Length: 407
Ligand code: EPS
View 1 (cartoon, rainbow, N blue to C red):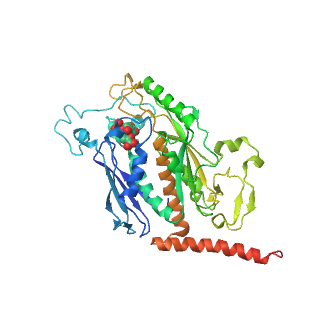
View 2: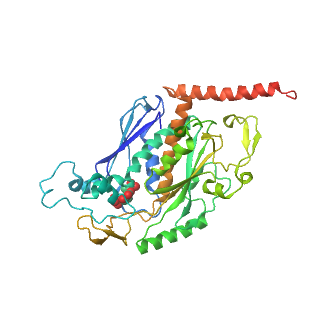
View 3: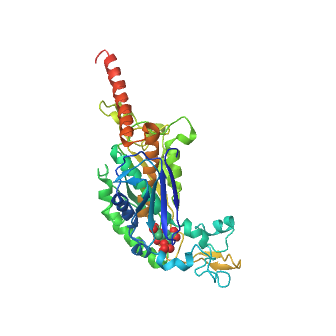
């Protein structure tokens, strides 16, 4: 990420989550409602625990926004944790009188396999894994979704939309409609699992209920789709400018995400070239795709690390949540003895929420790539630069047509 910089701060049971997003142009229309709508989508999903009933995430702008528009400076946002009221003594930033004698309550030493508890405690030299898990918690993604919602406003202004749907949960595949609905999120958000296959949805809900009874957790896969992109965001020229790589990094940074595929992804390796690559045909008038069309989109919207102008299609795989109510075996950090892992309140699955978070990360990466190609200090300037680029694609097409003997 070069032009847009996102920093988040905050612990799961601390006072608030904070996001600072720097590098936006001035003049992006932005209301708290735009952010709150995305925060609410992230809180939904069948299989979540009691925490989501406590929270009702709402943003406060602390900087960078005035009269409903960005000012060009860093946008600072805060989302309070309502649960903080119940955790003040445990999470108090100041030392407390009994810290040395009794220690703080809710210490975690029976480190959970699959969580950051053990690796973080060793690396940061902490005796209480709460010092690690509070920040490693996926609560942090609230701040990312807030930042992603800001990027969405920029993207929407230039005709780019970001949506997602759930395609797999706990061993059950969904069979989504082909083509996908135009209003992808409106359709997916109607489902408690954000899936477009009602039969699979029923089976997934039964699977979640069974996992809950067993004290177990479930993972799954969401597909993010970005539409309206112009050809040529990202670049082939250097490893760190390739859009595929930047999307991969962004997606793999989401807690519990273990795999990312663009287009056919791993399936490419099993097929021949003729079965993988998308044939190209002239399509005058499709300016954003450079006046061509691909009959298929197995590439998932990128070639050579750049957008093709076809939809970006990214699948993101999440492992089951590491906090099991029927805990796995571990070692107690304090004693070194064999123990059962800590079983804090948690979710059975958060895959539907992960889809919303993956949308936010996609919006961040794509907005950054858009600003690289068409950046400016104001939204009007960004639009003018994009229009200039699109006009150049039209001129190039017209020049070629004019040079053809049959034109
Ligand atoms: C999480 C554990 C649960 C989740 C939390 C992530 O929180 P708690 O420990 O308070 O019950 O609900 O997710 C969120 C709070 C959120 O906003 O998504 C964890 O350990 O990662």
